[in-house]
Image (cartoon, rainbow, N blue to C red; front, side):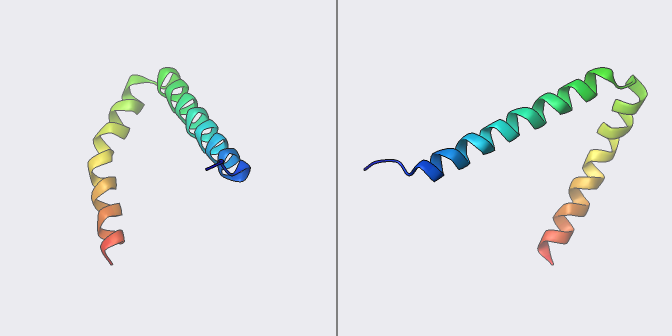
Length: 57
């Protein structure tokens, strides 16, 4: 069964987008102040709980 060229193109674009987003996040974390990173990490559980509540509705 041959692969659809559009499906391959979509996969390539998605993989490229994920890689670019990862690089941007890593660079942002490396350039941020330690106090900023600590504040974000402390806020993550609350953010996850909020998103979980919204999806259940």
